Structures are given as C-alpha cells and as structure tokens.
Length: 443
Image (cartoon, rainbow, N blue to C red):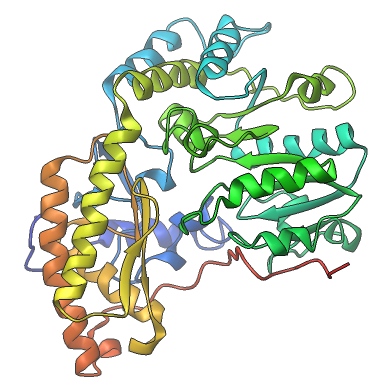
C-alpha cells in the first residue's frame, strides 16, 4: 500500500520513480529542467523523484504515495494545486483557443489588473519565464540610461548577464562577465562602494530569507536616484505573495521596473515586467523584446483569475498567518529540545530551515530531517513555501511531525550517529550564491 500522510511504519516505496529515473539517464542532461526539483536536492534512495498529481496542498508521486507539499512547484502554486476557479478560467479559454494570429483582449485586461494592483505600474509587458523578464528589464535599463554595468543582489535566472557572476558560468564570454557585479543584502556600503557612473541598473530581490534592516531598500532607492541608475525589483518570490502589490506595496519603496512570475498565475507559465512608461516605451521600437508565446491566452486567463482571488480573499494575509505558525512552532520545538543549531527564519510567507555546522555537516543534518519528514508524508526541502490551500490540519500535523523528527535529529547528533541514520546519499549544495561573490573592486 502506498504511504499516506501519516506516521508511516516504512519509508515510501519509490520503485516506479527509480524506473523512470533510469530511463532519463543520458537522455536528459542533469535529469531535470529545474535544479531545485532534481535529484541532487533530495535524499537518494528515499525521496520520490517524480510527481504526477496534486490537489490543494497535497501531491502524489508516481508510486501513489501522498505528501503535504511545502515546495509548491518551487513557488508558483500560491493558491493550491488544481484550484478550481483558476482551472475553470483555463478550461473556459481553452474552448476558444490558446495562441492566435493576432493579439488577444486578455493581454489588455490583465495589464489593467496589474496596473491597478502593483504600485508604480504605468506599462506592462509579458513573457513566459522569470529570467526572460529580468533580462528584458536589464536590456531596457541599459538602453534608457545608455550605460552598461549592472549591480545585482539575489538570484535572477540563467541568462548570460546574471549567471556569468556565479560558479556555473561556462560558455559565457569574459566581456559579459565584466559587466555584472554583486552587492550584499542589508549592506548599503557594499552598494555605495560598487556603484559608479556606468551603472545602468541595480537589480535585487527585495528579500530572499533575510529580513530587511535599517530601511535598506529605501536607502538603495536613494543611492540609485543620486547616481542616475534604475532600480529594478526582482519580485519572482515577493510578487503577489508578500502583498497583493508585492514588495513595493509591502515596503513602500518605489522601483523603476518590477519583474514578476511564479505566483502570478498559480502554476501557468507567464512573467510580467512592469514599470515607468518613459522607460518601457523603448520596447516600442528601440529595444527588441518579442516572443511567439508572450500573449498565450491560457496563462493570461489563469493570471486574471489568480490575481483577482489573491486580492478578493486577501491571500497574502493567510499565507503570513499560516507561515508564522510553522516558523514559531518549529523554533519552539527546537528550543524545547535544546537544539541551538537549527532554526526557521524568513518572512512568514516563505521561510527556510537552516542548520549550524557546529552540530555536524549541515547537508547531512538537513538530509536526515528530509528523510524522516518524507516517511511521515511531508515533501520537505528545507522551506515552507506557503499556499492558500495549506490548511490548519496541515500545519498541526506538520508540527507533530517536527516534534518527532527533531527528537530523532537530536539523538543522532548526541550519539554521533548522523551518517549511520541516513538511509541514502545526502543532498548536495545548491550552486546559488547571494552574497560576497564577484564583488566590484572599491573605487
């Protein structure tokens, strides 16, 4: 019998997952299309590799095992899997068509909704992925300012301008690498020491997990204004999640351009670039940014329904309340067990659980917790990506699971049996870096 969301006696049978995985070897490089979904982020031999169904906050793998999902498609599923009003909007549009030979009215309708929801939105353009949108923002910022350098903080996708500054920059010319540099979050001096007269734009995630301190974002705005550089918010994670109008609304800080994807359409592939009309009008002719599927109607229909629901039901408030229960609950359990080497932190809508190396290899600590949460029917990757479908029962059950699993972690650490307790190979580090890399030399 497949495992249910329960304190199961055995780890899930993942036979079919492993069979499909073997078929992918040599056929799909890296096995996956999305790094965070791939096998390096899950305990080998224990975690499922393929899912084939989702409903609400629950998912089922190809072997029939059921889980509460706290990854939620790595962010896009903000309302829940198969959320009926959104699915109905997609089905209704599907009856009329998907992609057409001329523009579709939904392009205008959704742009109007975004304009009325996201502060400082005067113009809107669409594409299919987040990195398309951030790259378009960088191109138009360079055209508008007639400058070339970019300063970034966070993760902004796989395109050359950004990925050149990471440790996965093979295939990118050195000349491109020399045009992008980073600065550190909550460290305004790192920005001040890097920005210069050739800086076209400063792009950052308004937050990743670290909470903003000392009006950092407003100070970034002031530095950009003084230098004549555009400020771009990469709102892949904050957009429609921290507030209906995203980080600009939540922090009351104006961005010149803002980039959205993930939560905008509850899983359908779409991204949106918003911002100042005088900047965005360069897309008329000067800056080329066009794609066949930019106006694809199913995703636009999903966006229209999703944004309306987020506003009408005050979804960000629900995400915050449910996420706060998990964050506070986890930390109370850890404290009660004397585990000063693990904590849950971040804004309530999206939190992360971290492990201190003083207790052992952090990846092994994380892997043991993941292994035991999966046994108890929780798909856990170290994050709480909250959705509108995470019920009170889900939260209560998850905290009960944490109580048992953190006791197991404590015993493994205290008895120096961490590696012995792991039933498979531990997870690997993600490549992503968000601070102290490719810093620009001080002037």
